[in-house]
Length: 309
Image 1 (cartoon, rainbow, N blue to C red):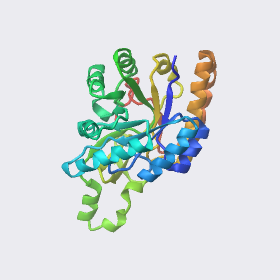
Image 2 (cartoon, one colour):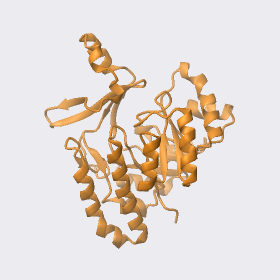
Image 3 (cartoon, one colour):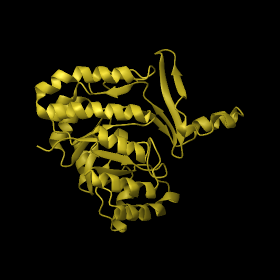
Image 4 (cartoon, rainbow, N blue to C red):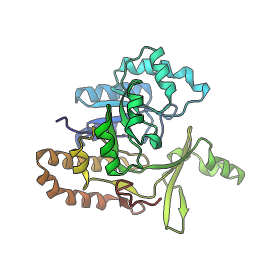
């Protein structure tokens, strides 16, 4: 049995070093020109540095190219992937078929991980992209646990599932915040919106606050709660899901590091014995609750269809 990978999105090179100590097996990095909703910007030079660090520890390094590309970005795809191949990264996360075409034309052989966020909902489509070069499917966050297991049972590719962190529930290619504040003649008040972690969309009816920020890919709105599956991991591990992801977007790096260490303990306990995992899972959940931001309640996302947002 292959052990399930623990994948984390880091904020910086130093954060990668901390996360390796905490027990992460793999990292997803990139920059907003090519990738969506990343905790930190990694230039090509920084990706090369990260590759050196991760290689020494036998860790995996993946690069996000999951943006939707307009015509003006197409010429940049092949040179970027050629450089990634020189660096020796372990995978490219993509959603736009343009990446497949550019990769083939550039004669790049880096494995592809298919990630379209909301449309990765069945094994037929996962296998469709598998026949076109993808080795992994990153499943939609809206699937139930039963649906995730069914995909894994029938997929000819690896399966990745998010188990902790925020989930994106809306994206617009337009700068909705910027346009609004510009109309209000308050543009200077919202500088660096992509780095602002304290802007929220308020839902008074449900008493929810939805984090919202902008980057070069548009406007992103996130769930009001943080998904947390640390005390429900056994069914995902029983199903031999290939990769479990902790998403660090808009989270404090120290929080992500702590959460990673707790998931490492949970996964290692499971592989020791299921009884050991069951004995420690509630304590680990409580440790996460202790460091959880007050505005971000924990839930199980859509795994048990309890979430309403």
